[in-house]
Structures are given as structure tokens and as C-alpha cells.
Length: 376
Image (cartoon, rainbow, N blue to C red; front, side, top):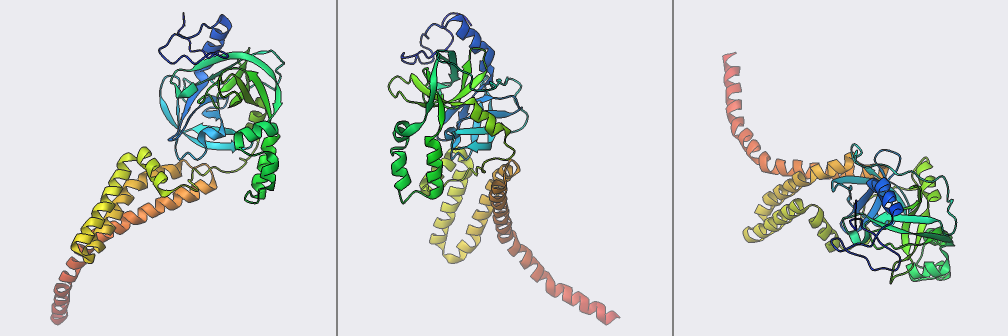
């Protein structure tokens, strides 16, 4: 790279969009970018974008939990623009971390980053963050410096949640389990840095001057210039990667959402299937109303069977890529339900002609049997 072709976010400066003249980067920043940017991926879901980075286990990506929370489908985009499907392998909602696993063989173009052995930063140490601010396609680098370790504490907790920890602890509508989780969140330790990141940088790495990961971008505490940012320490990443079993399973389910919102997301993610099933259901309902109940008994099962045909492959694929018991149960049940709809629709369409043909042939068969009996 030469000139101003490197995308840079500098402290207290407005973001220069892709295509605009970028701030100058010194040689150390440029070298760090060239050595580490091949590990950076863009996280894409139906409702959010974020950043992630490859670690030294093939196919594993570290990001923030809030980047993928509630997502039914997760895709990652590598630096060369290729898209891959990914699934949740483990999550830590207290420390806002998630481990994703790329479906199939890990892309060769992803060069994993090394995790620092511990939180070894000292005040004024040079650091840099990498990511996709505002969801922009280019990878930006944000040079800056480490300030200190910081406890989440009451003030930051209230800024992010709208309530103080004391208010949460006394709220009768908050379950004991959630109260304990909030207490742990309030005790979180962060790495506070003077460094410019934006929405979309979440989940990206904080690097020391040697290119080792020392933290993960989490929250900007400066909503005007985005130049005061806290990062999850690398020690929390080590803990999650080294534990034997996941803390709890992610199920990709929608909870507490209106049906219309679920339908909109289905329309976004599975356009043809959703449009097809909607058209079939609407057409069957209209035809039934216009022609009488006896037709509904024939057309509606056929429509449901066709819906099963459209859905079974997608749910079967989700079942095969499930990583935990709850997903196996959910998608296995869905696959069986789709298969039942398909089988039921096929029976309704084809069973009547088969039964009619069988009944028509019965007298002939009986007569033939009688004739054979006379000859004996």
C-alpha cells in the first residue's frame, strides 16, 4: 500500500468514508495492518453487522455476543469478499463474547491472530484496533494508546442499561438469575484506551505493537467522537476457549417477538420459500372460500405438502449443522414436521386416484377368483 490508500480512524477525527481521502498513517501502523488484516472478518446477520477475527484453531472466529444475539443465520465475509455460513460454538453473555465456527473447511485466506499470554499492557503503550466501522467493506485500522484498566461500575452500567445496579437488584420483574448476571456484568474489568472505533467495530481485535490480541472491542464511552473505548481483556477470551463445555447453548430462536417481525425476517432470509408458501396458503384460502368446504379439504393439504417440500431441505440442513442438544431437538422436530406435511399432502393428492383404481379393480378380482374356484 502507498499514499493514503489505507483506511484509518484517528482519535477525535471524523470518519473518512470509503472513497474519501484517508488520514495519513505512519509506517508502524501500516506494517501492523499488513501483518494482521488477513485475520479480520465482517459479521453479517439480518439485523446487524460487526467484526470478528480468526484465532489459532482452524475455522474459529472470535466476536462480541451482542453482534450475533438472536440471529437465526450468521454469515462472515472474508477480506477478499467471500461469504461463508457460520454457527455459534460458544457464548459468554456476561463478558459479551462469542465463538463462531465456519461451516466446512476454514478459508485458506484467513491468517489467525496470536492471543497475548496475558493482559500485559502498561499505560501509554501503543495499541491499534481493526474492524469494519459503520459496516463499511474496507478494513479500518485505529491507532491509539492504552490508558488503564477500568471496572464496568455503576455509571457505565447505568449508561448502557438505563438502570443502576441497585435499581436492578430491587426490581421485582427481574428474575434472580438475571439479577446475578447483572451483578457480574457490573463487576466486569475492561481495558480502557484512547482509540477511535465506531458501530461495526464491535468484536474486532485490540492489538499490541507486536500484533498480538490483547482485547476485543466492546463499548464506546464517547458517543460524540467515539474516541474513548473499552475492550474486553484477552484473559476472558482465553477462559472461554479453554473451558471444556459451553456455558450454555445458543438456539437461534426468536423470543418475545411479534409474529409479523418473524415473518419479515423469514422473507429477508428465505425469500422464495416464504413467498411460495404465502401464495399457496392465500390461494388455497381464497379458493376454499369461493368454492366451498369440500375443496378446502383437498387443496389445503396439498398446499401444506408443497410448503413442506420447500421447507424440509432448509431445516434438514440446519439440523445437520446443529452444535448442541437443543438445536438438534428444534431442527430435528422441524424436519420431521416438514416431512409429515410433505407426506400428508402427497397422500391427499395421490391417495384418492389410487384408492379409486383399487376399488374399481376389486369386483374384477373377485370375479376372477370365483371363476378360478369353479374350475377347481
